[in-house]
Image (cartoon, rainbow, N blue to C red; front, side):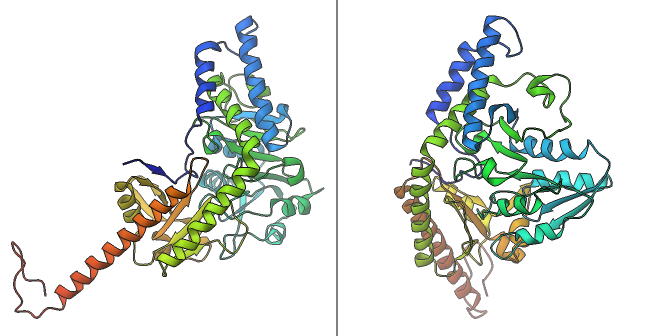
Length: 402
């Protein structure tokens, strides 16, 4: 039985062209980009080419790209790099940010910063005016994601940037889920910093970048070398960066076609979900969303139970819950949207990607419908046994079920 992967927001499969770029760098470009000999120069040129490809995907300049280990480090560098260069002041985040933004914000709060968390509407959308109203004379930075990792809601970052223009307040944008899925242009958007990760666009895990607008000063959080123009120390992961550049190139070339194709597939899937499972509750559909993301709940079911059942069918999706240290807790995003803990606990996320096809969606829908039907049939049998009179026959090997 072939496997079907519908969890691209967690991590996208590595593209074949990316594998080749990584392999070539490992086999032939093993010099250190900081070295002045020929191999060092070749490594530096390879890295510069990747930097230009990533910058092109974002509409920025190559010299504004700082390579990191991924989206989490990029978000940390943006927040701590700005905050630690000054005394405690005021930071604004939204309630639906990724934990790699919320946790640094919480740490700054422990260090004496004032942190405002702006809420969202039932679709996961944060009103720009609500963000701007939270700005005070002490505000140093706003961190607002471009799109949500769980429900796909697109935020109006541009409106916030326009409102902040001339105020001296920096705007950081976590675009990890948006890169390669929707059009991004840092100049049009007006942000000052933007986080991106390779493994969301078909690159390898372990590399990402922070785009930093020219003229913005950051304190490095990784020290010990002058790499990345003194903003991120350490010998770069050249092979991963080469793959990142290739993934960015492919994403840019295929963006318009894939946006339309995947969007049609997502819409078809949601229409079928409503038809086949009348009790389904779709989240975030009332706002502009990523074209690949569907988040929904099936009342009466636990999300993790359905994920396990589908995995046994060879289908990979994810829940709307966060898992940490072996415990499952309801999604903070869905709770912020006003969902009950029970509904949030039953949520599932399906995220499509480059390799997703209509037959994959059809198999997923068929398997989910069958799992739900079999679960409902089993529940009806259990209830029938519970309603039997006390003198009913005993279950073989056990007590009478009354």
